[in-house]
Length: 210
Image (tube, rainbow, N blue to C red; front, top):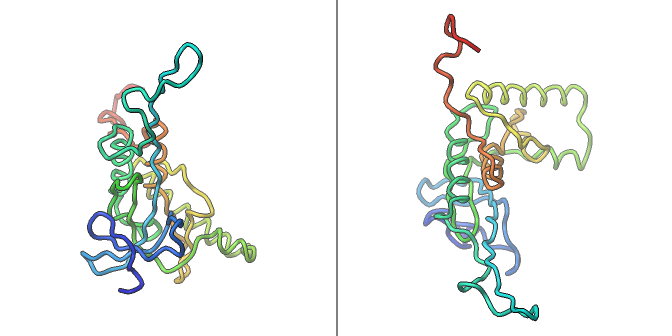
C-alpha cells in the first residue's frame, strides 16, 4: 500500500504519490479501497466559471461583479451534471471483451474522474513511438476495433474519440477500444448530447412510414 500513499478521491480511490508537488495526474493507476483492486483513473479537468468585472467610465476595473472570481465548476453545475450523465450512460454499455469497462464516474476537486478496469497492456500510441505495426498485426488491431464499434453501434452509440491513445494493445494479444465515457463527457461539456435517444417504437414495423 505504500505505493498508493497519495490523496484519496471519492472516499475510496487512493492515488500514488506524485513525483513532484506541482505534478497533476491526468491518467494513473489507483487503489480501490472498497474492492481491494487496482483500477485505472482518468481525469477530465472541468472548465472554470469566470464572472464579469465592473469597469468604470475611465476603463478602470471597479472590482468583481457579485464577488467575481475564477472557480471550478462543481457537481451541481448544469454543464457538469450533463457531463456526468453522459459518461455514466456510456458506462452502461454491456461488457464486451473488446471494450474497456467503466466502473464509476464522479466529479471532485474541479475535475471529472472516470474509473475503469486496469488492463495489462499499453496504448497503441506508445508502441508506434518505437516501431510500426506489421501489416498482419495492423489488420488484427483493425479487426478488433471494428468488432468493438459493432458492439457500440448495436446499442446506438457512436464513438467519436478513437485515437492511438484510446486503442489499447493488451498483453494477451487483443486490441481494446477505450475512451467512450471520456469522449461523451467532453462532448457534453461542449454543449452536445452524445447519448443515444430511445429507439423509434415504430421503426421496422410493417407499414411504418419514413
